[in-house]
Structure formats: structure tokens, C-alpha cells
Image (tube, rainbow, N blue to C red; front, side, top):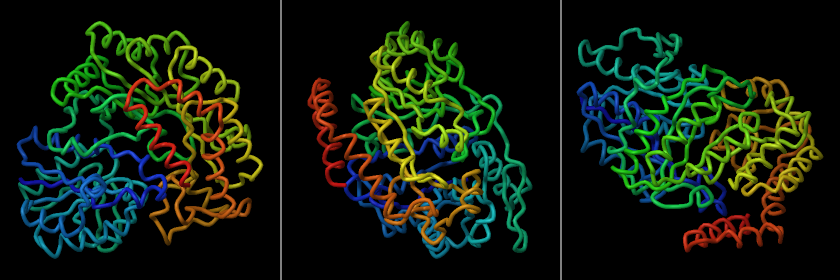
Length: 469
């Protein structure tokens, strides 16, 4: 069958505040490229329209989407979207039904995974997919091809006469069974990380594991069994990125890349032994690293690691079930610096019950740690998370404006509580960035790290965004 995997048009300016739009990344949608790879392996013809990337780079809009729908004329369309794209999904559904009334539509992504009942708001949809969709989506397409109907399959959400029926989401036990992402279906020239998150171009992303065993209340993807790709498969994919796409820099998007230190060592040693010319960064936890491991990562090309620090308040760390201590945070940052790896610290503000004093404590903690990059975010209660449940009881969730659910300071806050006003929170958000990045010591330190024209460009764009807040 002819299948179109579609993400609705969605300009970057709707995600980031105007002054910060130059800092936002445009990254390949790996989720749908994995689905595409499975579909192609089973003989289906696949096209991908990455609306957000096309909108950001080429001013792609719904008129362009209309033309592409007519040109591709698919049998099945899979629409994947985030919660913040709610209104754009509705517009997309109406457009598809107007142009291709007989085409089957399957809905997926965070918009439906977090709250399956949202399916009732999309009558145009045949069914929805939740959980790990690669093989499920392929089974749906095969079922439509053979019978014209969607059979009851694990991972499928049905609308049965106004009532949502949810089947058990499947888990891919051995993720090496999933083919490498079908990046050849993307316009790879569209993609570029944030200026602060690469060292060489071309740069791209990859995922080497799934699942996270930790219990953070804000996470919509964690609380599940950790399943890694084998170190052999990881090395093979890095080689494909270098040889087929000319990639020089990789952002590894695992929740906790170093969760299994021995596996991390195997990957690093494989890069070193094969003499792969690749730079990379990753995300992990401060309690899953050691100085020796960080030194090996540096030798294998790692230049930056991101730590989810979240808060400088022990009470808030306990409240969000982060499972780390202030001392572990300090040690993790110190070890990374000793290994000469830059540190990106993620800090979040605006949790229910969090006070202005605790937010200021977090801002000061970021400066005390002196991380190389501080990324401040607004606490966002995504549907399906424990934070969503807490926010429902202790605050007011802004369900009138789903575009605010982006983690980055929107015009309207995703949640309001009695502990701090929306204006105070937005003012503190701006203060966090300005007080961290406009310190003379920080500016001097960044200047001493300049090694290329690309470094100058990255620092200029970052500074422009901060000053314009």
C-alpha cells in the first residue's frame, strides 16, 4: 500500500518565544522514520512529510500540504503530533477528508498516547496507536490491505460508537529487531541542532536505547523497562551516518545513555578502535557516571553531557521523585569538568507548591555549579503523567491553550498555582537566563573556548536570544 507519514505544519515560532527562536533545534522525527523503515521492509511504499521542519526552514503551510496530499494520493495516512499541536491536527484532519475522503487516517504521538480519550475529538480517524508503534502500524496497514478493516491488535485504540476501547500497548523486547531509521525519506538538509548543541556540521540525532526505570513525575516516556541496542548495532548506525550522510556530530537522545556503564564502555571502545571521526553528546543522570567513564567518553569523541538537575531545592527534588541528591549533582558536574566534557544542566521551575524562593534557589544553584549551558524550562503537566494528576488537584491546567505545553516559556503558562503568579513565573524565567548568561565570568569563559568560525556563530546566536528575552 501507499502510506504517508505526516506531522502537521507547525512553525518553530509557536514553540519558542520570539527572541529564542534562533536557539531552537530542527531535528529529524526519528519516531516516524522507524515506522517507515518497518513499512518499507514489508514492501509498502512510504512518503514522509515533516511539517514542523518544513514550516520552519521553507515556510511550508497548509496550502503546500494540500498540494502534496493530492500529489502523493496515499491509501493510508499516519498523523503524528504533540499535545501542543492540537489545533493543527484538527485542521489537518479536515484537509485530508476534504481532499482524500477515502483515505484511512491513523493517529499517533503524544497527543493520543497521554490521553486515549482524545480519539473521540477526531471523528475522521480510523483508529489510533499508542506505545511502540513500529510493528503495530505495519500490522494495521497489512490488515487494511487484506480486509479493508483494522483488526483488534495490541497497541490500537478504537472508537466504538462513542466509547474508547484501548488495547494493551506492546513492548519491543529486542530493539535490534527494528531496522535503522529510514532517514533517506527525509530532506536531511532541513535539520540542524540548537546552536548550543553541536560542534561540527552536518549534525544529527540518534537513539541507542528505550525506556527508563526512574519515577520522575513529569516524564511521559519513562517508568518502563530499559532496552538498549547492542553496542554492535550502535556502532553500525554511527558508521551509516558517517558514510551515507556525511555526519560529523551526533546528539544521542537516550534518556540515560550511561545507565549500563559496561555497555557505554563497549560503545566508546568501538568508536576508538574503528577510529570513527565523530563528535557526540548525550543525556544521562549524575548518579550513573564515574570519572573514569567520563574520561573514556571524552576519548571517544564526547564533548558534552546533559544532566537533568531540575532544582536546587532538596524539597522539590523529592517532590518530583528525581532520586538524586544535591551532593550527587555537585559531584557529577565536577567529574565532567575534570574529564573536560561540557555540562548542559536542565532546570525546571513552576511546579505545584514551588515557591518564588525555591525558584531563586534553583537559579543560584545553576550559577554555583557553573554549568556550561543552563537550560531553564517551565514545569509542564503532560497528560498521562503523575504531574498531570497532581496539577489537576493542586492547580489549574490551561486546557484552553494546548500550544502552551512546550516546556519553554509560552505567553500563557500551562499551569497556574496559588504559590506563584503567572507573571512572577515568567519574570523569573527571564531572570534565570539573563542572570546566568550575562555574568562577566561566563562570557569570558565562553570566549576562551572559541576554536572556529562556527563557534563564533553559535555564541552570537545564543547571545542574541538571551538579550532579546
